Image (cartoon, rainbow, N blue to C red):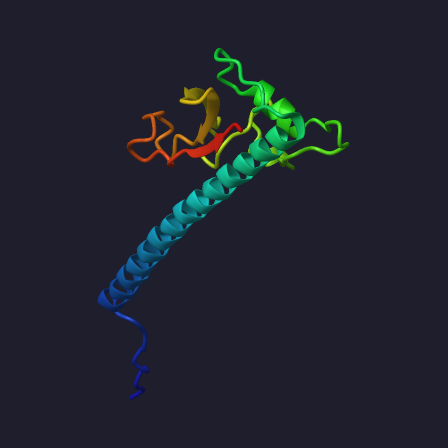
Length: 156
């Protein structure tokens, strides 16, 4: 009598348990990746807002006024041109890469929404330039909601 060797292997239950564990681990990894991407986008937007504020202050120091802003210019072309065009000093005030521009050539935040520029007058005849991002929801809540708080530049 010949004995056939018993086949050794995994049962269906064992395989399903392993697949379930791998699914849970993959879900945790995806959630962590999404959180880190959002944090990186926020850091990038903060850095870009600071860059824009410094560029506006430099523009003001060089030309004695805030960058031109047209109230009807929702795409901020004039501000962008003023900050990136090589001026009297022969260099641009902000080195903006192509990935930070939309297809129309406007400055955009990490969520592909144009940065908002607004000039308001303050007592004493000075102007204040307000720069802010609409944040991840892409809705201009005027600084509320998940908008990034504005960066302010005041004229002298």
